[in-house]
Image (cartoon, rainbow, N blue to C red):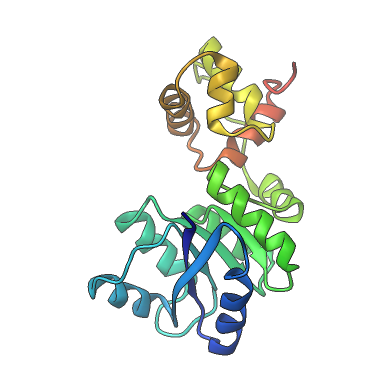
Length: 212
């Protein structure tokens, strides 16, 4: 069964062109388009289907991408949001990720790169291209190891966060269940005041936990 996608973008021609591209992807289908955050909320309230993934523009009238991602994090935390914008500046990237976006792409992305990004987002729960990761790395305060107790199993998990392994594959490596791996992730995010796997990976690298 294909994973469902909703596009939130006030430029209807762009949204429809994007819909046509995605509908040719083997694993995904667009179920509808919303013009802004308020339009999306109204569709949810009118019992429109809740998608697996949302491709979110940032600059929109009435309710922009920043506000909409925050609303989704509170009301539909299981939806994976990928920012898709012309804005690639540090402030926009960091704010979208802090507000709850699990991925970030620019609108000039090649269709094949978009398809691969959606696959990674669906399988791993996040996707940040190299340029976005560099922005995240340079803007995060990761000097938080002092005074934080990290167990041996949490250290082992941190080592794997810098790899391309999915959480299920990490669970196999650690000989435990995916739920246990998710508990390590949640505990570490809480201890270190981090929000994403990228943040955990940066912490692991800067504090020597990524070394084999």
